[in-house]
Length: 367
Image (cartoon, rainbow, N blue to C red):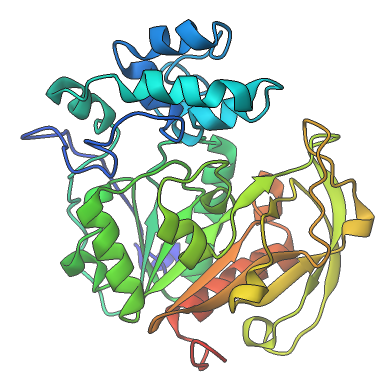
């Protein structure tokens, strides 16, 4: 019966109930609060909102710890900091020192540690038995902005790619999968629009070691799109560039995408128009050793952010690859619009990028 469904086996690993002690090894567990803290952490602290109000009464008016998350995690407050709110105010610099002092004075209690770590998990999912085919893990733990149409469309496309390529594919939203034993079986871990800090300190270490020792990473759209990062290695070493925004006037615009990398395309060249939410980054990842797999032509659209700021990069990679130690990474910023997972060129770019990250395309990481 499964053979009749295609070569890929889609297995969505369910999230078991949390058990045992609360998570206490999240990255910021005992860190003092400050302007660089996640906004959600400040808002959930019993004294946090009052501390902010005492200095800037209107700073978080209308904000809740899970705003943008439908009342429950995930939410935008997990991918913003207090400092990011101050940056857009004319008096932000003047207020920064006072806000920092007020927040630093708040006690870090055991109850607060448990609350700020509650969005992480130690749940190790029961993985299906490997069946001899190349193994692909799709990671979907989202603590920040979750765009369900994008996540669902990507999952559907990844399932189709796996069926065509003959891969066994496993989906999970549990951070506990990031351990050396479980990761060792997978040729690549695909982060499906993962937004928000998702891994505990041991999980971070396991994932980093997996990549540096020869594993593969493929990131899709939102996996590189947080406005504030709380894991520098992921942003600066793995991705090699930090998201600075996307156009807001309008949000979706058509630009020409040019495929530029023979290792990904097999020598095929193509330029095609695509309507998308175009990410801009604080630096050109190629300058940090990446190879651009696709670029966009900035002459085709307005690089103006929501506040009127320029988002122009000049030379503008929109997908790239590089070595991470003995491993490989591939990232594509294409993928906000669900329709783009069915666009032939974009779908092929995603498939070939994942295949390269798996090490199945016959090139060394730095080729």
